[in-house]
Amino acid sequence: MMPDAPFDPLAGEKDQADADREPDAEAAISDAPEAPSDSSRNRERANYRGASDPLFGFIIAAALSVGLTPLLPDSVELRYTLAWGALAGVSVLSWLLGTMERIGQERPDHLGWGILYGILLGIPFLVFLSQHVLGPASDRLFPGMSAGSLLAFLVFVMPLAETLFFRGLLQSQLISWLVGLLATLWNVVLFFPVMWGSIAEHQAVALVIVILLLMTNMLYVYVRDRNGLASAWICQIVCNLIILYLPSL
Image (cartoon, rainbow, N blue to C red; front, side, top):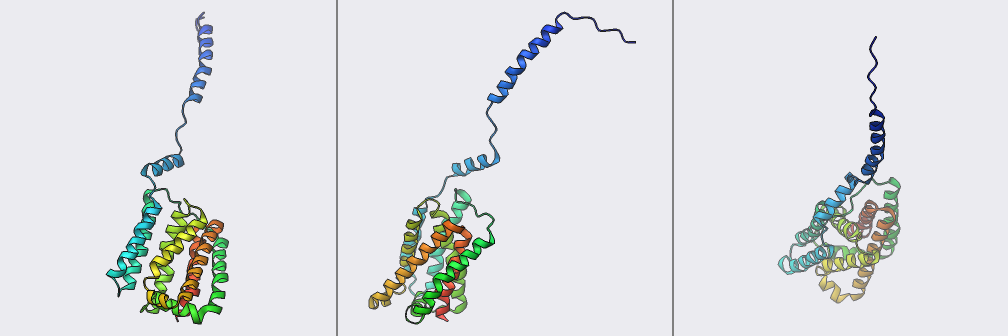
């Protein structure tokens, strides 16, 4: 049988001192700053790297488009590729190094709304303006292009660059209607030098084209606000196919 431990008259005082220290330790732990979460660290890192200036990128791309007009008078495809590539390059750099919104998982019904809006806008123009406006305009906007090259521009190059830049980068920092106006200005700067001779002879047709570009760009920013970036992307592809590709066939 083990002998009882000797009585320690200071044991009670030690226990009381330990009990008095425990609330102080808990208070110190509660007052300590919380460790930053992964999301906050990522946000701080993105802010530290800085966001690119989208208006500066817009000016650079527009200046490149205008400057290439006299340098590449007979190579419309190369000029379009470089100009849209500049827009896409600014968007990708902002996505990698700045604070551009990431594309999340999209809902199928949102993509369906993008297709529906594109059809609702494109079909009336195709029915009423196909022979007198859309067909000649498509031939002048993309002169000498084969059906395959035109399809690649309208489905891949143009929607990719303009959706990422205007609806992805620019619309996250500016109000929607201003983004629609800037996108229309971009289209005018890009397309009108190619068809300048026709514009000088047919001002009414040029006005109809500007109104059409404005309506489509306003639709894209609306779909972006309502259903997301991927839906606006799909909507532009559908509009391009109906308004620009089918009349050229």
